[in-house]
Amino acid sequence: MALLNRLPTRDRFQIMGITTNGTCVNCRNSNETRDHLFSLCPLAVDLWRAILHLNGMNFTVLPWDDMVYRACLKWKGKSLITTILKIAWNAYVYSLWQERNRRIFQGRSRSTDNLLKEIIEVVSIRLRGKSINKLDSTNFFLCNAWGII
Ligand SMILES: [Zn+2]
Image 1: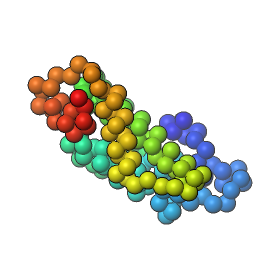
Image 2: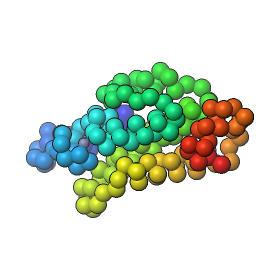
Image 3: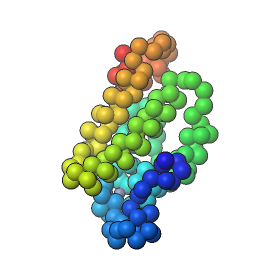
């Protein structure tokens, strides 16, 4: 839904005349659009930066379309890092959307650290018990960083 830009974000409700408040609840500083929510919002920026940091990767703020383009271009093959990036990406998008809904509908919020912990748990559970060559130093580093047993 995020890829197709079909999520019911506040900018779309505004266009339909359903609401006049289009502010992002994750930062209260910009209009809530798909691109803002998942790539430019400070919460998204902090979370994706932390995920890439766990992989030992550098981070640059990119617009949503560039993030998706880069992922399609680079995340190929079956290496551990590619697998982690794909799982973490899904968990990242899901947790940002869930956080947005939690703040709107329940008036509760979680910190970036808590969201990151949840994403780490998703990655480690999905990869637990998989056959991973830990003699490879990159894999060894990634298993430690993500708590993959
Ligand atoms: Zn925001």
